[in-house]
Image (cartoon, rainbow, N blue to C red; front, side, top):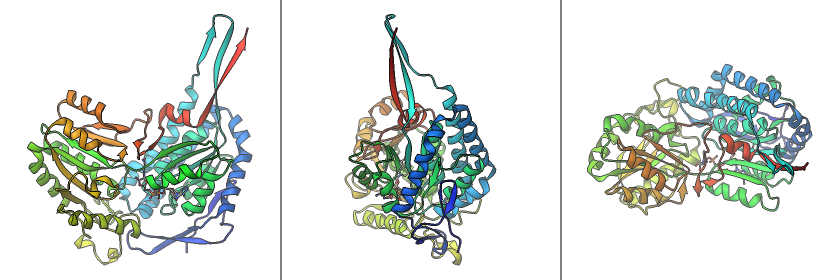
Length: 481
Ligand code: TXE
């Protein structure tokens, strides 16, 4: 059986306990490899290796750090086939999506921060000729980087790149459901000439691996992406050490459709916003709100289009949706469809295992895109993150009602507004209580801009200057003349 290994101090290592976890394929539930069931000792070894490497890495000129990060980006691009297949096998996401989105964004993350650190300008001030002040930005040390299973490489590199670019070192904890791409990345980083100990990977369960990382006094900052419940746990675990925390958590995002849209034009984009990556993106629009004059027509056109989406073997070019990531998650998502039915929701399409999949996939975690209407605003389905291919559709009359409904959620990650009237869009964008608003588009990301959520969607922002801010400490030096 294939086994992945931890990557600590520049070498691949078995877990000290010699205990292993099995990874089941989302396509057919068969075991496809084993990963380390690492324990506290493995994490402590990784942290001490990183701490040993920190001083030298922090003193490495930005130009040199930048070159190494660009070499990592080159190797990611050169190894897109293996990396994309790893994401497809682990997550169940279409290979075409991994090739178009996940892997290119991983190398873009490295390139973006490799360039950003070469153009940094800091603040200075002159006190009427008496003294001068200037700001120094310095890395903190060992960064604890924890990523979820839906976009494993995309999100872990979004943390690694700025952490290393600013001179920190890292201990990375990928999700136990999706370890392959980080296992491959570790090798690429070593081949790019990253000094040993600068970036370490420890595979295993959230507790003990993630917990040990978060609780350890030698790890001054944690960048976490994952579910809201786990985010709360991470916050509690970090108490007592005054750590810097960045929490990217869950979402229950509204897609707001005004009556002036051209349905033929917007429905394909709203389908993508609803079901891309099997709906397993925290930014997916899972609550569709349509102005009432357009509501019935929208439901008909959208449900029909959703029923036509190709669900099947994620390795096939024309597949739009593969299976969900795990049996546990599949059962959780399916249970929400049953709850919707009990709450008198009307399932317009989907909610069940696709018929014509063929024997080889009969044990896979496949679910057809599901559209549900007529649920009340306070239904559990509207208030809970499902994180799968399940969306609800409801109507509203006036714009302020649409905004109010969109804001009636424990989450505040993102929203999208679809309309020809941009003055209405600007006004709605101001009133939506979220971290990102897209107008007539979705998931278009400018890495220079801040990204993050409010309320139960998280704490802090990363991206552009916000990442530099998060991964460095500022120091003001004042010199008297
Ligand atoms: O998260 P989990 P998952 C969210 C998305 C969904 C969730 C899915 O909305 O809710 O992520 O990912 C580790 N101490 N986002 O199920 O279970 C765990 O091993 C420390 C939001 O993986 O929270 C895994 O590596 N770590 C996001 C990671 O935490 C612990 C975008 C996440 O696990 C731990 C993508 C512990 N006690 C997904 N327990 C956004 N807002 O951008 C578990 N972990």
